[in-house]
Image (cartoon, rainbow, N blue to C red; front, side):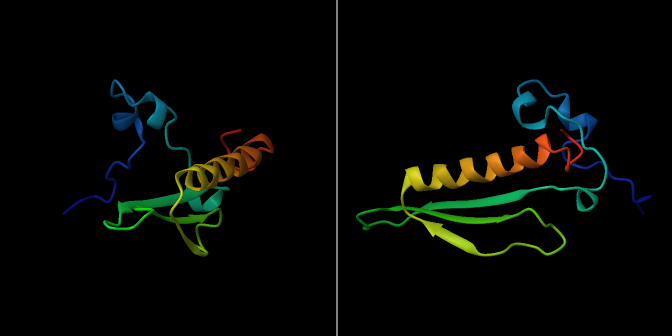
Length: 103
């Protein structure tokens, strides 16, 4: 039986691996539900036979206790990239204001 203190992704053992610095360079700080934290999930696949085969389901939230809001399905690469950029810029705005503890 475990003591309940298993390591979380992004904590020290994971963040020190060579080659992961761009993704896990900052150690985990505190409880994600107690600070402004964004979560974006992208599910990507191709739909064979379509004139626009790219499919990207986008789910996002900046309110983890409430869960995800709407899900968007995007078929255009530039629109998908713009959605990711918008999400990251929104998150950066929270960080600049010091709302997420990583500012």
